[in-house]
Amino acid sequence: MAYSQILGTGSYLPEKILTNADLEKIVDTSTEWIVERTGIHQRHIAAEHETALTMAEKAAKQAMSDANITANDIGMIIIATTTPEKMFPSTACLLQQRLGISGCPAFDLNSTACAGFMYALSIADLYVKQGIIKNALVIGSEVMSRVVDWSDRATCILFGDGAGAVIIGASQQPGILSTHLHADGTHKDVLSLTVSIGKPMDVEEALYIKMTGNQLFKLAVNILGDLFDETLEANSLTKADIDWLVPHQANIRIIQAMAKKLNLPLDRVAITLEDQGNTSSASIPLALDKAIRDGRIKRGEMLLLEGFGGGLAWGSALIRY
Ligand code: ACO
Image 1: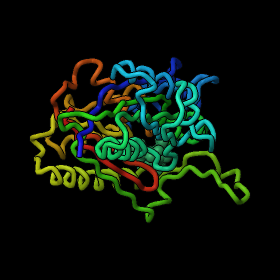
Image 2: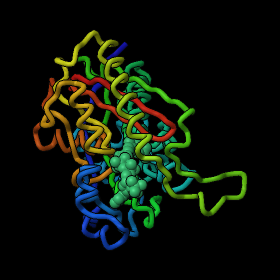
Image 3: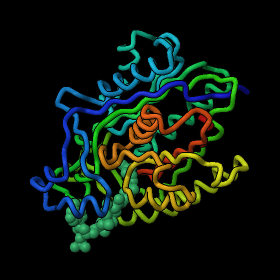
Image 4: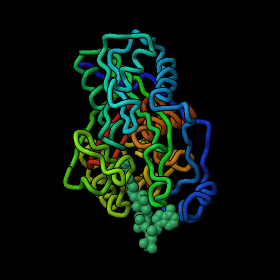
């Protein structure tokens, strides 16, 4: 079996910024509450003409340029998004057409929420490692601002829009060492975004994120702790071998707990939450791209990526970058 590696990364954030002070004018909240409970200071909000597709395209082109490949070199496109352009054709097919290519498999992962990027990365990794394809374009792209209830202060303060992309390609050296995916439907009610198909939609229930935040918080901390142990054990490594944690950006207090679990100082954690909020499946590739582009993450370092979200669904990847 061959190896797979991250060959390039890219990202896109909408120009418009919504600060906590702006939110104080929309719902009964305060900058102090939001910063203390979440760590978020601002988030990017898509313009009317922007969608998961347009943002994915921008992030993808940057990643392709970074990896020094052309669209014709891409053997698979996966877009993790809970806010797709359409139910079908997939956002990935629409992107494929925009990139001027055809033939390679292209599909969306719609329902794995904030864990979506980990699921997408895992699938791409296996296809590359098996030698079935040479390069995959893996994207997380979200317009969360269109599925939050702007009158619900418990959720509307959390989310932001954006897209992150990576090119995974065949490599001579070990890169992605292992990926680990899990789900547990017994916690289906703690986080949901209901779009009923095949039966009349309850307008009250539909189209907005519903979340029992404090319950989810506890589940995330416990589940992610176990996931780290599993990931390290599978590779016969210890916490001391990890150079960087690249987590899903849901809450600074969850991220702090995870850094503590790994004995990592916070400056060894790729954090974008302050400026970007929770961009669901886009948050991990956005954080990865930022830390690589500004020179913090360097080739040869050991990265632990983790995602956790509705389903529940969660996953990790250990990568020798
Ligand atoms: N401003 C002011 N007060 C607020 C706000 C707000 N924006 N939102 C809630 N409150 C109030 C509540 O009404 C409650 O008041 P009460 O005590 O009078 O009833 C109080 O603050 C405490 O509410 P909690 O929900 O218990 O607050 P908590 O400290 O748990 O923070 C938060 C909430 C930030 C949502 C946190 O629970 C969290 O981050 N949870 C995890 C989220 C997560 O991991 N999501 C997974 C991925 S997302 C995905 O998959 C799409």
